[in-house]
Image (cartoon, rainbow, N blue to C red; front, side, top):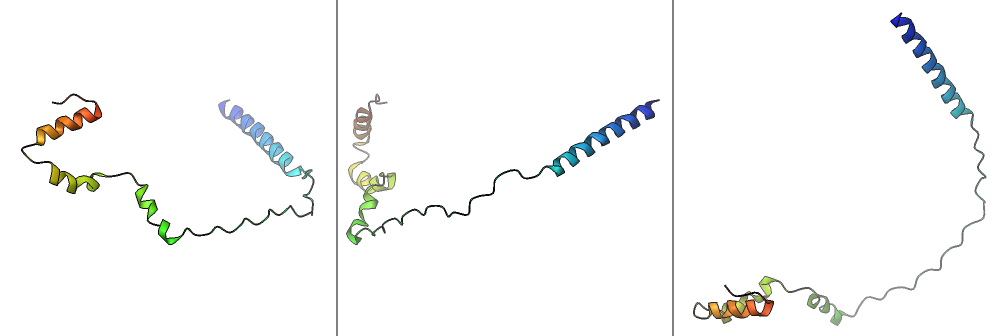
Length: 99
């Protein structure tokens, strides 16, 4: 009895699948074909001139400073004698209590 119900289910599924596939295959393309008129062409943009050579170095100044930029200055200004004073000054600048 179980095999008979499986066969019936398989036959029904097969018929549904065949019907679905044949329905998809029979659809005709009802969309209108695209018009043969060419689309409007956008005007060509004006050429961009390269910046003068003297401005090329200006982009380096726009970069944020890094620790390496201040190493030499720190080595000259901070010594073992004034270390705590420098730490206190930096803490005061950023608004944190000194340790």
